[in-house]
Amino acid sequence: MSEAQTIQWFPGHMTRTKRQIEKYLGQIDAVAELVDARIPVSSRNPDLKKLTRNKPRVVLLNKSDMADAAATKAWLSAFQAAHTAALAIDCKTGRGLSKFQPAVREVLAPQIASWQRKGMVGRTIRVMVVGIPNVGKSSFINKLSRGNRAAVEDRPGVTRSNQWFPIGKGFDLLDTPGVLWPKFDDPVVGEHLAFTGAVKDTVVDTEHLAARLLEFLAQRYSQPLCARYKLEPAELDGLAGWEMLEKIGQKRGMLMAGGVVNTERAAAVVLDEFRAGKLGCLTLEWPEAAR
Ligand code: G4P
Image 1 (cartoon, rainbow, N blue to C red):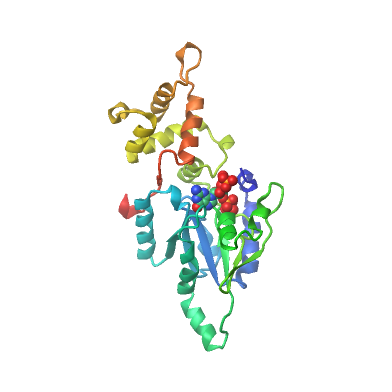
Image 2 (image 1 turned 30 degrees about the vertical axis):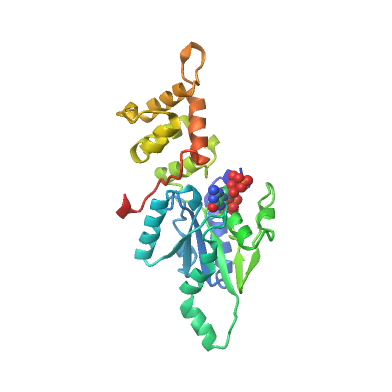
C-alpha cells in the first residue's frame, strides 16, 4: 500500500496541488493523463482540463493488461471520436509505451512547426505526468526513464518531490506536482475505486463492497464469475449480492461454528481475487456507446 493511498482528501490538498500545477504550467508543453483502463471515468480527475488550462493532452489507459480488451478498444474509439488523443498502455510489461512519444508529437504538431519556424530545432518536449494516486504514474515514469529514480520517491514517509526525468529522444517528464484527487463526492466513483483497490479497504465495508461487485459481475461478466467460483449461471438468478457472497463462501468451505458462512472472509477473497485479475481481464466502466 503506497503512502498516497492513505491520504485523506481535504480542500487544503486541492489548493496546494492546484498551486503547484500552476507553478509548472509555463514550463510544460503537454500533459500525459494516466487513467485506469478498468475504470476510465472514475479514475480521472474532474478538474484536470481547468487545472492544466487546456494544455495539449494524451490520455493513457494504463493497466490495460487487466482490462477487457474489447472495452479498451471501445474506449480508444470513444476518445478518438471526441478528438482526444488516447493510448492503451501497460506499465508492467511496457506494452504500448513506444507509441507515447509519437502521440505527444502529434498533439504538439502545431507548436513543433512553430518552434521550427523560429529556428528552435530539437527543442526538448516537456510533459507533465498526472493521475490520481495508484494509477501507475511512478511505474510509467520508471519504465520510460529506465529506472532513473522515480521509484525511490515512493517509499513510505518520503514525500514525492517534483522532478524532471529525461526519457531520451528530446523528451523530459515531470512527475505530478502534488496529489491529484478523483471525483470522490460521487458514490459510484468511490465504489469503483474501492473495487480496484485504489482506495484502502479500511475505509469501506468490505462485505457490502464485495456484494456490490458480485452484482455487477453477475450482470456483465457472469461467465468468468461462474467459472471462478464453480457456479451454474442458473444459481445466480435473482440473487442479491450478499446472497451470492454467501454462496461463494459455502462453495469455498468458509464456514464458522454452526455452519454459518464467514461472509467477511468470502468478501476478502472475492475482492482480492478480482484485484489480482484471477477472474480475468474485466472492465467496470464502458463508454456510453458500447454499454
Ligand atoms: P502511482 O505512482 O500513480 O501512485 O502508482 P504506482 O506506479 O505506484 O502503481 C500503483 C500500483 O499499480 C503498483 O502495484 C504498480 O505495480 C501497479 N501498476 C502500475 N501500472 C500497472 C500496469 O500497467 N499493470 C498492472 N497490472 N499493474 C500496474 P503495487 O501492488 O502497489 O506494487 P507492486 O505490486 O508493483 O509491488
